[in-house]
Image (cartoon, rainbow, N blue to C red):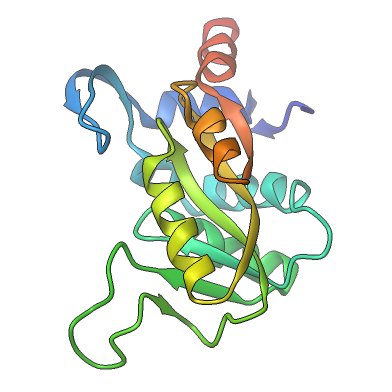
Length: 182
């Protein structure tokens, strides 16, 4: 992957320095980690989010009809990608709301659409598998997912078992290496 510059630092190093925390953290998977990537720190920085979206736009597989941003971290990423690419964005909840439209996926009808699932950080891939199953049950075609950070904890393999190819902009190892050399 080409090195992207951000304020004199490559993009991977900037993401690491902006979002890497140490301590004790319980992950969505239930695993306990001593380091954590606080994705809201890179998603809330407009310049950093723009550069991530530009890199992600180049990684979108051909033939996609839309972007499915997973609640909550995938939503700003998918929205930024939509602005850059012109692809419509759909917002995928972890569970359907109990009021209003009572939909799991907001933004329009997805039946028959080929959607790229967008996530921020992937650890085991469990939520991506659940959300992919939900999107498929609603009639979408899902074969690919894109994330910013792969924590290299089995997510790629679990998604492959569900027929989904995960592309990560960066692995945890790449972020660590970039931060160490900058």
